[in-house]
Amino acid sequence: MKLLIMGAPGAGKGTQATALAERYGVPAISTGDIFRYNIKNQTPLGVKVKAIIDAGEYVPDDVTEEIVASRLAEPDCEQGFLLDGFPRTMHQVHFLDRYLAERSAPLDAVVSLMVQPEALVQRLLARAEIEGRADDNEDTIRRRMEVYAGQTAPLLFHYENKGLLVDVDGTGTVDEVRQRMFDLVDAHVKA
Image (cartoon, rainbow, N blue to C red; front, top):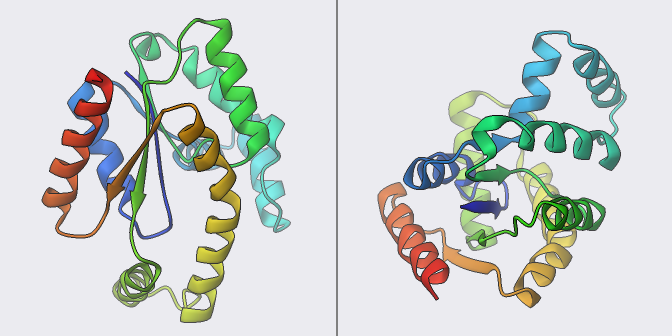
């Protein structure tokens, strides 16, 4: 299984990504985790990424694509993978499409966790309070939602046009969302 999972901040993407990867026996690959690992271990890549992030910039597409290609080339990805946090731009989408086409390994599905924006704001405000994130105020959270929606709409449209998009209602308990997601992905893959 070759899968992507997408969802706005607070949609439960990280939680559901782990479950989805376990269900299909594939590694969950989070670009954020890869960046944090490299930064923590001060690898050459980590030093480069940290300097970019510290300057308040986004990690450029070519750097992110290089990291993902390197990770997908590892032996545990031969039978599939679940990408979380990649692709985030149309440049990255086209890179991934080319990368997979060269290996005759197309995506099976793109899971999109859908949650109403107001519910996401409330989830993130509650999480910020629990985790003591003073910088996660309502204005910041709403701005992140706008940025996510603007950046992600073309990606979702691309995958919908390719017949890969699986929209999952992300409201309810973790278990309810998980079961809904499993049912929809299973049905999509069998179709």
